[in-house]
Amino acid sequence: RIQALSVDIERQKQVLKKLETDEILALRQLNAVLDPLARLPLEISSEIFFQCLPPIPEPGATRVPLLLLNVCNSWSCIAISTPALWASIRVQFPRPG
Image (tube, rainbow, N blue to C red; front, side, top):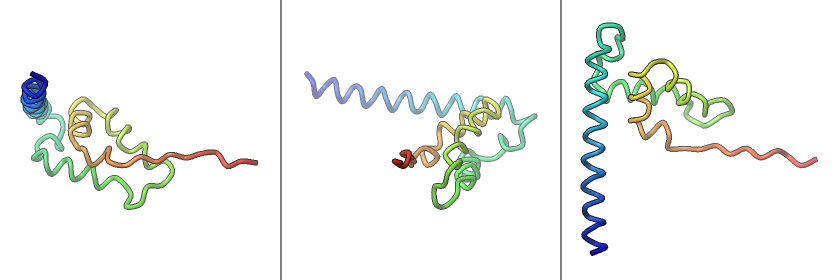
């Protein structure tokens, strides 16, 4: 029973991912008139967003994905659907003394 549930959960995750992609595409069509970036294929705009990141994480660079989330709904959807923007994390600890 657990295995069947796990299989069903995976199927539902795939359905959800497809629905999220469909939502992004619908939003992009809606915003295409006002937003030139929305006219580009999702793969290209995702790559443009990814290129906003520095090659080596540096202070303040972790804000780039967060800034993209705040431009508009279309950009937010693109940023959220671009896993490479969220693939690294920088943790900074205060130096003692």
